[in-house]
Image (cartoon, rainbow, N blue to C red):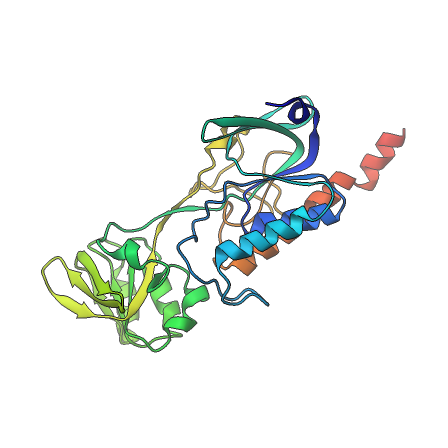
Length: 316
């Protein structure tokens, strides 16, 4: 820990450098705030070669989008980025104290307010070959990648209760769809009837392997040895938030372990804000996350300025 780090009190510390965090950082630095961006550059979409639906950047690599965003942010006076990971956040005399560590290198930062934008971590179903094709032939975000799989023979794989909803959404792009539960109880009878009405095949068998090679995905091999030809598909990972570093602040979480916030990103802890997928998620598009970051940034800046009552109290 350096002397400079103990003396500097940033206006805002942003934890997470994805689209939500970067968008907030850019807007806040343009509001003439001192902003510390903390990010280890380990995004969950790093396996994806191209991201879609981001205005003027359709088809860009997610990693390149992050680099461009950091460069834009760091071009402003008062902007700072640390490649590290927050281990804990506590209350201090001058604000929030963020203890960080990455590869045994520790640091500390102090900020008046904190914005959480660390998003989600994902775990794919344990299926041989799935990881090898994830980001190329298999994807998780239907809104992002459905167009590029249009009119193909697809599988949608999921062990979560929203499998039917995701499959029905995918019907916008393909009529040749096999809905696979991988042996999990993720479809109700009503779900199956709705999928059957669309002409989709429901398959409750366990999956042994996603088959293919350099030419791409060729099929699914089930545990009973049956092989079904496909060209690609979508998978519903299990998502989890990694927000243990907030435990000392004791914020309110929902049943999914995500931060409870109002419509402007304010959490139950005064001075702690959230943007992106660390709170109740919507469409998992980068542009949606960026919009959420910009919206919360505006809230933070207004709150730091203070209202008329706060200003009147300060004058008296």
